[in-house]
Length: 286
Length: 338
Image (cartoon, rainbow over all chains, first blue to last red; front, side, top):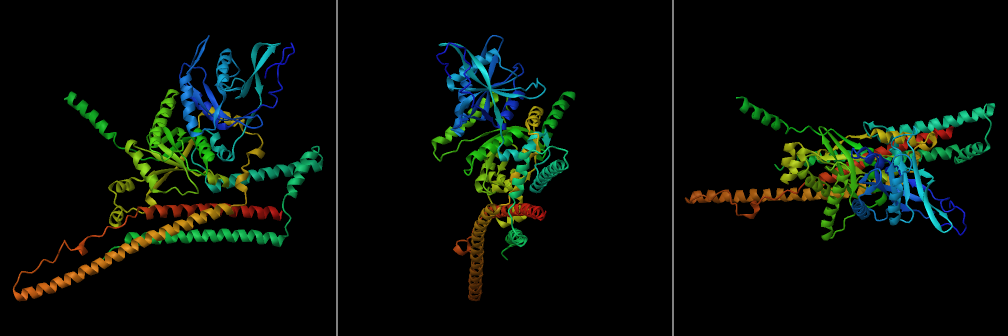
């Protein structure tokens, strides 16, 4: 990211053009939890981000831990030994996770952040700085990520600028399943299999209804037709395999029979177990 | 009088604190669930464990944080390492105000085959130091089916007493009225989140229902999963039949020994009659030195109980998945008809 030979103030955006960060929701949870537990006199929480750098340059942020720090108007002090201890412990479990940056709560980047960023850039070539606005100052919770870009005039380094990079919040399937229960403040019990099925099917039904309504609207002329959407819909409908009704029925019935067989087997097994247990416990030598 | 009644009433108060309310609910934070999911998924199919931290409040066990354990080698020197790791993590977490209290551990499992003797031993180890501990079992293979398979387990008290006495004979079990169902108690799980996190999540949630849909639940192919389940079931049945054979062998030995005892007794009696006729002292009717009077130890029923538990688990799972498959098949049928 060094500036070229020109004596023009350069914002070298080329290298950061394809840089983006992928944040796992666990990291957000961790940060919020640490924020809630912070000591009373601290205004914000600072911590390290762990993860890996993917082959296309995206930074994958997977885990995080808080680092105690003291902050005053002029200076910021970070507990470096703690930071290293935690890093070593975390790497014992997961040696592939390395430092990729650091986070702090609160909107925007302050002067002290530059110093901390400097410290982290000694550990990692290009650290990512994540800010999580727990104060909801903009009326919503904003999560932003920055990398440091060097501003140079000719050959002299003038300053470093924090430049924002796009963030991708993704959830893995297992987490997506639990997303509903993660959303509310409390859930009384985990949903059982069938309840989950019910919810999923309702959602599917809602989707199908939406599509129906959209197609109706287009046909009646209430909404202008969008060709790409139309193409998507026709692709989806065409994706249903064309089977003749008898063949399809046979397929469904075969699967049904298989499942019924398994159910039968498992019921027999359970009966057998009950019987065996009664016999075993009741057996006495006369 | 007042002076002596004051300490007595304090003692009374202290004495009544001993009554422990039974554990009714385990309250887990969303953070812990995410961490467990992440850890188990990353290392699957290897089995991993970790420690749970939290608070024990009345009839609710709150789990507020957790940390994973590194994969432990079988080496001796790594044992001390593991303990060091644990202490280090707890100390570091204490500095950021995380609850430092161990309330149990979590482990991942494959297809629900977690009932082993090691589990019980770990429970007993934990129970010695902590009054109430719980084990959370997470099954990452079931998340492909679209189910969050999280369970909180605890050993039942009566089982623990028996285990400490280390006797699993039929008599004792009948006394306590304990069957294989009573070994593990499953405790309902409640999930709680701090308000901040739920605000964030609601914010970050995708607005359209399209990305919200959990498509994995609608997958039609449950065959591989069922196949594996059946394989495990069959293996367990083999194990169970082996245990049954052990019992049969024991009973056969026992009845043979009894027959021998009867025969010896008859002989003694006949001898005594002869002696009485000859006017001599009758011999005693029992002879403890004779090897046929030695009591044969009854084999422990612990293994068979555990295996039975596992089988029941597999059956339950098969039932659950079959139910889901029925739903999906009928759905597909309806869609096709349209």
